[in-house]
Image 1 (spheres, rainbow, N blue to C red):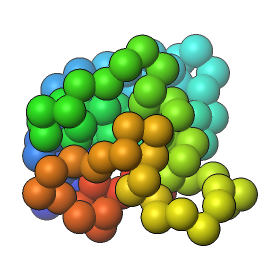
Image 2: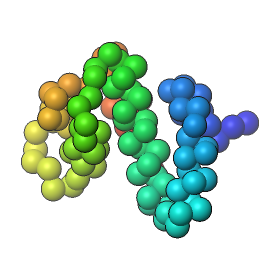
Image 3: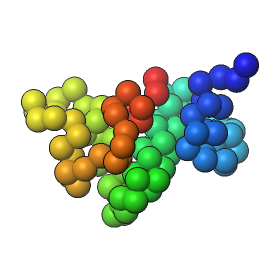
Length: 97
């Protein structure tokens, strides 16, 4: 049986995530930092897989919009790009925690 991270990495083709996490941990990253790293990579890959190109810094903006409790009552999928991955639902690509 594999863990949740292994299943997500396999599903989204995040082949280098283990090395990225090990490197970040060796550099002193906290568990929250590691979680954020995975969520950013997952979000970026979900958009790329859906054919939605992202501008530099857009993953950070989208992640903040999806996770910020202070965001207005607008739908969470109404982000800076006004889009979400095609054919996916929030439960499918929502950040892990």
